[in-house]
Image 1 (tube, rainbow, N blue to C red):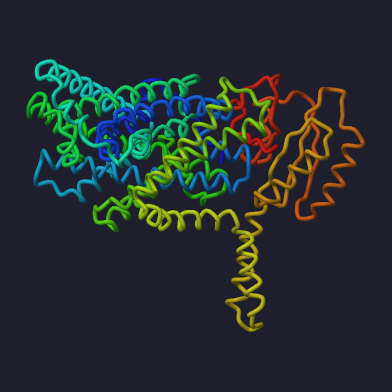
Image 2: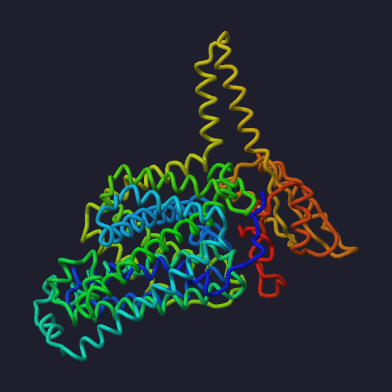
Length: 582
């Protein structure tokens, strides 16, 4: 089943709004979080986060520019390393999205309860999740209109709050700021305060990875602009809000009102009307973060399902082209977690922290592998080695810092991570597990037990159906070593017994006898994979790939090529999802 290509691609504003609502909602909680751990130096910690995010702009730009397909860190690792490693990134990203959706929806309704005291938070959270599930089922185009409205209102509210805080400072002076600066340094020393403040503040960039998970729905050239826009918003507003909060409120007030800091600021600098406006904004932008989770997870799950890591029933589309089953399953998972935790979501915050930071680190590792293993692959921009290593080290430090601050988070994270990765590992090794089950049945088989005999035959049929999926590798080089790597990769990462090796030659040119002889040798060396060599005459083009996919009924994401060089005439995204394996 080939991925559905949307006719109407998203522009800069829509794409920025979808991912920006998630990352910009962080200002509602990250300033208070940074103050809790860095005190009067919280705004410096947030500025350091902005510097780290600037480094990640290049990292994401290089990876997604070279491999412009949905999937984020999963896609980066899938095309540079093994499927198992890529599946680890996918599992962490799924956990991150699930935690984001539940936390954001619950916090949005908690803010709304400040306006409507009788509101049942749990029930309204479920309703909010259902609303955004419905929007995603209707279609990403309609969803983006909602995201744009929320994003513009949110930025307007932040500008308004910052402006009135500035006026308040002009009228009342800097006494509160001076008093805060005179307090003892958190954790006993400035470096430790900045370290733990930075670790906590790194949550302020959660959502930066979202744009990479729906890059195929964006117009050409939009993705790097979304990275720039998100970086600008985070680098300006997060430190600014923290600085202004320290200038208008004592640290003790910030710490005691951490869950509604911006509302308290609004009331302090201009009265109840601004506090009410900020509360409304909080409800909307946190709701926007829920929408981002649904859109991001739809793009990611569709991609990994096409790669046979999750069951194929998730790929069913409605008349609007939406993979509605993904949205429904995601909604059900979110509701189950909400009910299990009974709305006490502190534990999920730990899952969120570790999963998000791990995904960021894996994206950096994907960039390293891209540089080493796909160095000839064209890309619009490149990150420097020094900045890449600094960025990865910064994320690892933040991960360590969060575990030191909240040791229980790691245990809670493992409770959610282990079942998730277990499901993925079962899918990746399902034929081996089915064969093991066959051996057990054969061992305990009673010749007169027809049920066991029927089960034995049924499992064999399932294995045959899985392995009947053909794969294709396009090659032009007479390179037996490269073809050996291809067969090793397919044997270790895919469930198949059939591989077509296809070479496209100009008219009048054919494969050499040595090449055909080498293929026959490889066919004998890998008896579990039937190798079929096909030579075609013409030109290797995206249209040829699509034609062969339809003729042979082989999805394009089951077709592989080696890493193309600078002279390759087509951008990778024009090939329809062909994967790189060597």
